[in-house]
Image (cartoon, rainbow, N blue to C red):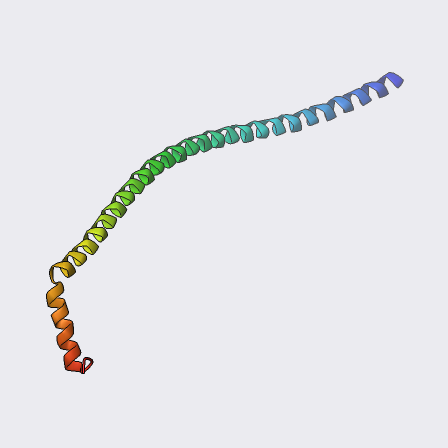
Length: 114
């Protein structure tokens, strides 16, 4: 009798262990699926990071070109402004007599000189 009781107890334990093994295998299978999906996501993330890096390098090159272009424009505008101011001074120097006469006529007409 005692032997049968022990055998029944062992059979119960084996049944529980088999059931636990099925649950464990199911958990391992789902974990493997999750790990596979995670690996795929990481691979896609690496690819995206590479693409972003290439885009940033291209943008940096374009910004450098734009900076050079803006510097060139700034120099051109500065030279043109200097040229314009020199032209105005040259005009005044060349026409100082006419300008003086014009101011004299206006002042006389307004009565400032009387």
